[in-house]
Image (cartoon, rainbow, N blue to C red):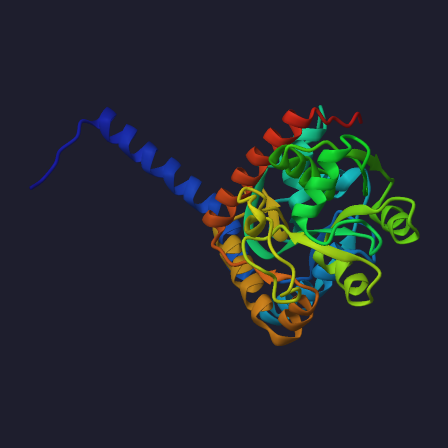
Length: 334
């Protein structure tokens, strides 16, 4: 069937087709760049100082990702302000896949703590791939008068506000885990916030304070050495690295499932082709024995998921921590 157009209508149609062609052509360089990615080294920003757990995770991950992608993945530590400085730097980076963020629970906690952040963590990033997760462990000194979590609760209820617990600072995962536990158990403890996990742990080991919630990788060597004893672990199931430590759920606190976790983000607007490649690279890296075995030895558990699943997890985690922080009335002024 032939279609005839008047001259003016034909010109409008041809103009529209021309505009569409120009638009399509202008998108081709970006599409080609995404298809050719990566053509140079990739920077993985870690928003903590060198030497900590996040740095160790990033370096294991970078090795595995680089092998899969055929380009070096270079770890760039940008610590400070609870992870907000490094995260802010990535939020301003070009969305081309060459600057990635090693993210973690600190980024779902921080929006509830800080009145103003230079980014919207949930919405200003593409949450691409989870990597690993690990629980908190409630530990006490060996001379603390409690052998079980039930003993601990009984002891705390007998003297409200008199039992001290240490943390690496206001709003850290250990602090928030203990706030959750206090509400769940109906107890009141006295929080002593330190400027970092290292001095907090040192004072617990020295006997100044006798209670602390630690990430499992930090707690493990001290538990094995008999310098601390574990009362409960905050994962849904027992951890293979600490098989004799019961979960909070086993002791009657099913909502006490709290994990530290790590994953990879990119700036919002990163091309889908790049997102898919990064997700595949992370999944590949975590499956490598030279990456997985050191993680498991430290009590970390592989954390799998698609970009859509990881995005849903991040949003749920941020909502949960916002509720905990609001209930505990915790705030950090910048």
